[in-house]
Image 1 (cartoon, rainbow, N blue to C red):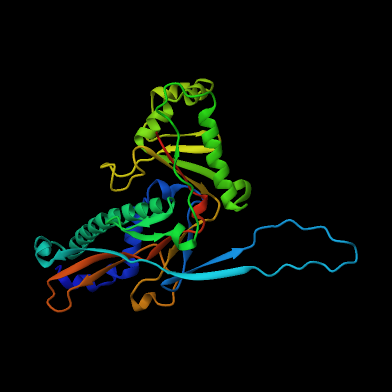
Image 2: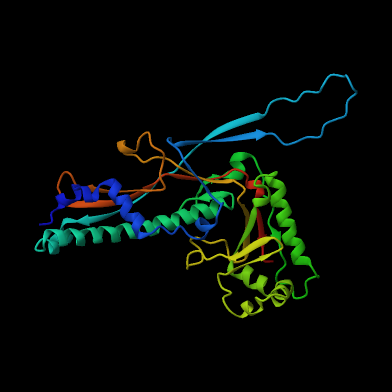
Length: 340
């Protein structure tokens, strides 16, 4: 018969719990699906060091033959520690919830109980997935935000860099100058590539996450209408427009779908956020968990475990943890635009 002691069995061991979550599927959201955007960095400590080097190339002055060779100094390096954050949430299964399982066969009852636990894990992981997406979205804008909107890290401030001022794309102009939009997009791309100082080389891909109003006016812009009309995708203007994507002037524009309330996770309905992928400027550091069994190991994306009530044997908590730090090492390579 099923009792609360079943939660101490191997079926609910931490390793088994992680495997069960994996089977349920982990869908991090759009930003987690972009190839080459975030580099996973497992670490064994709570602190993550970010090293900066002043090693930009410089012109070489001419000098007479046989004269002393001008010398350059070594790289000027600075390294600063930043702490990973703790994300944790649980769901309690009370002993009373198992009453209906006591009269059932042991094996069938255990399967039913595991299914119940998995549903709780799925609920927790949906919250974790949303939190991960919120952290990623903040990171590609230069400021990682907590659930309450407070700042965890402003990478431009922390690293002494400047993100270019927001640019008006003038999308509500009924009669824009010919080529005006392409010039604005090209300027954004140049700003990003120059700020990268060669990082990523030709592999760099630039994305722009667009809010709904920005996207709608962008799709109605004469240059975009003309571009679609000149290709086999002309009919796309009449279908599959919401939350779609297309390339223009070397940038992939995406109608970003955040949360359905358009505010909890959102780029702002009148905004567009530009950032590079494959440049190596975004990392996702992961510290190990808090249990003894996690010490001395590289951090994982998340941890899941079952915590029984040892004193009264009245409940068991399903808990999910993560210890990440989303890092943007070059916030100067980000770019912002507004609809008007």
